[in-house]
Image (cartoon, rainbow, N blue to C red; front, side, top):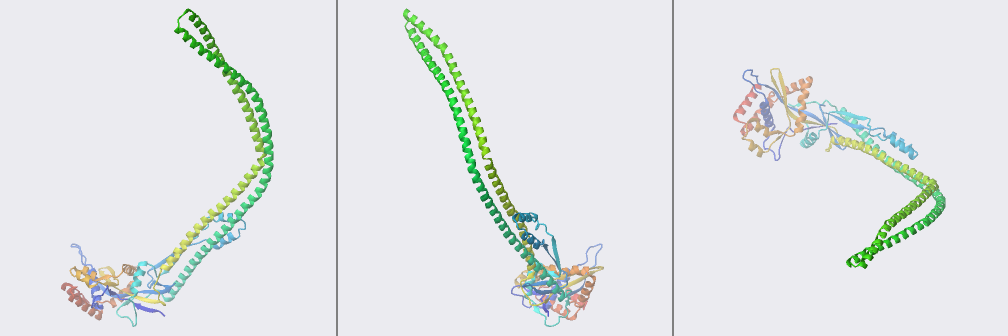
Length: 543
């Protein structure tokens, strides 16, 4: 059983306007319609004036359907449509089964590598078009506020063009059921993705733990063999070093004897060089002393000392040469000694290296095995993180899709299907072969303070301030009617016939009400005398 509600066309802002009636409403809309009528244009090729064929009050059907704790809004004429889309996901069950079947860490690593981009390559996008569903946030917000003014229809409405809904209650139920199934499917996907992430994390932790256990086993097994080989290698190394140390000591002793003799000769030559140097200094001193005393005996002494000086000078270079040659011999012997010792040490190191070759191989093998396992852990963590990030993206996509579904429902809940009649006025104009439609949406009657300030304004500006559209979103929604009328000739015919039949210009009762409304507006100075007479003549034409 459906409930029927009707909304008021005009509502007063804030404290309201005293004396505002249906008659004033119709009169104000007629004023706006007449103001919107195009008058003749041009001087040479003057066009004729547009004719106002009809101005009628209509009611647009809006369905309210309870869903998921809120209320869905459906366009009763099906003009509005909503296409809901969400990403389809790969088979999560197959992915989970693939992971569960991996019995070893190697097999698990292979599974992860194979599925590294499994969730990145979406199968596609699933779309669901719901006829009549209204999802505009602005319209839903404004309409929800508007609904507070609705009243239940207790008796048939007359002199109004009631647009019959093209979407039936059974069609609504089918659409809502389809929406519920689609939302449930998205929820299932979100739950499966979450479960898949948890299972993947757990499986990776278990496999990482298993690989770490393998590393411990590798260390334990290798360390036992290494300790055994290390003891044997240490014994062999000690023997080799002792043997070569003895050889080095023997060579050192042999060369030490040679060096001792050479050093002895050098010391001898150095001692002789110092003596000759002292002799040279002594001779030079004596010669200087003799020159200060110029006697015959002193001259003979000076000659002797000069001869001794010459002998000293000749011996010094010979001794210096002997010292240099001794140094060269020492350096040569030391070089030979160092070369032989170095060669022995190289042979010792080579023998030691050969003796520890197995030990080094065991250590290198252990480190290589551990490094491979550590790389396996890093690969498991990296690939798992990659897949988890892809799954997170999918989960966010599903959450966003659920949010889009949930925001389609107004939070204000209604019991059962409710049909709401939203009022509007629509006019048809004609000029020769041209025709034009204008919709006047539900409006707000401004308060007296604004109106008082606007009394000095001219013509339609004053009236538009008096009666302004209550919502831009509602206005845009109702303007779809013009597009529908222009596209659907059958619908245009039905609307035109109903509009002419219920026109406020043709029905005597409505026309009289408009006349009274114009009088009230004139009395309140919202219409000038000329405007009142012009609109009165218009009513007279249709009388």
